[in-house]
Image (cartoon, rainbow, N blue to C red; front, side, top):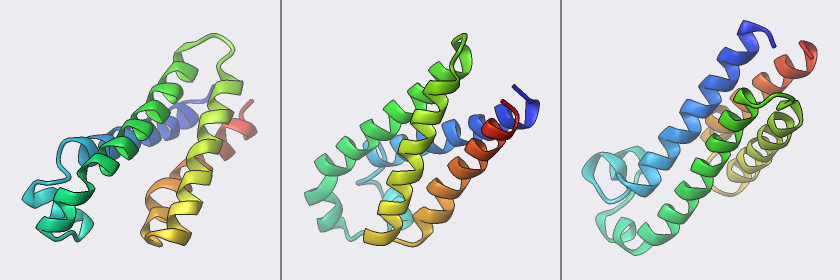
Length: 118
């Protein structure tokens, strides 16, 4: 696997891990509310849902990490990058267009590099 591919996948892992932290731990904080543009009341009411979503993002990051360190992890990487791209597209359509650029695009770049360098 090329260095560029490993770097791109590592960036996606870092992004997914960041989303997990924001959604699970910082959702109700002033900084978390500011990042997501949430009122205090809405953040309180939706904290459980956000934490659940954050957990899924953590699983996606863990899956990519597993794919990087496992022998023959190509299929796992393709699967988890596909999941992130689909989630990012859905989020861009249903929640915020920024999700396209923060989640789907980095995963698509990583997948393209992975496929080209396989």
